[in-house]
Length: 465
Image (cartoon, rainbow, N blue to C red; front, side, top):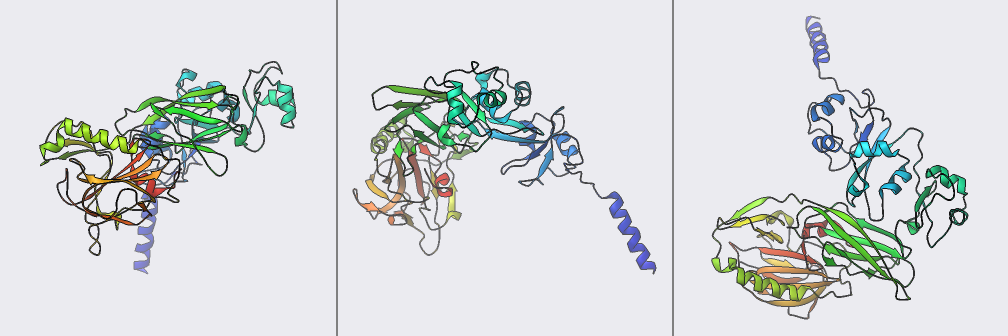
């Protein structure tokens, strides 16, 4: 009996003094749904709230305890209720079209996103969009293209002028601009994405925001028989047709490109020879690459003249854009296992205690298994376009995978393929070694996309394009 009373007493104390978790529903304020990759500090910065206040409002004592799908109350956003979403601005979106589609009052939208001018509206920016109680998100796009009147556009969409005017805050049928983007209730129709010239039916960029060392994927649907071109940052885009009629361009973003805003322009050449263009600024974000010091390096491999000559040689090999696509699926590991990565893409490097004016353009794999410790494999199907010795890369192999995508292997001891040979994914192509600028046996794998080295591991995680 005595032991039972002690147990009950201790249990009461544990309940009395246990930390009390406050659910998002019990605190006051709008609710944000935690997304994959979020942290409390990122969320606090995004909504301009104090981290301690955010934790207190949600009864959080450990900032590392955060799960995707969790509901968080965001304190300090007076007058806002319901759920708060975030979304990346994509190509063709505009300040006016986003407020129309989400039905968020202009002043509230500016307040939440700290916007002073519509000129701050860039592709890749993550905007805060509240879902107001009783509001209706409008997904059906309506464009008054080709000199079309609002009445004609309404008839084509099986609606009426007054409904469109109501949802888009128009004073009447006369209060609409040429090629304006309007919205109404209904299912999203990517074929009628506008704000864009009439040659473009839709345009979007995948995997926003684009990072340093990332691969930009631009997907466009056009009117029949339209030829596409354009630029991203300062590189000419090459578009290729897919089975569903979409045209796709892939462009690498250099690892040393300063984070900021850069141009993306699409150029459409119509069957009659006329041209239409559309340009928006795109946000490029930091890749958050670490610093690394590499000592004991042969000075010859650091000679700027040697490096420049080798870079020009490689560029001349990877610049041609083959129209065929040789790969069929996500790329595969060029070695036996991924657990042997010795150096990561993007490292800002100091050689022999010099300045941090270099970056690691690929991924280094060391000895990877006892069974096949020195084997190097093709990560995807392609054509061998170079095998031979150079100073920095050592024994080098370059594989053309098609559509401007190339793999480059460095530091091999032996070649098992020859120039002009077709290889398949997983085919043995060489023996890992320590030739060139190397402090020990390893395979250096670079991936080039339209003449720029990109993060190879991205291509292992998902299919391109």
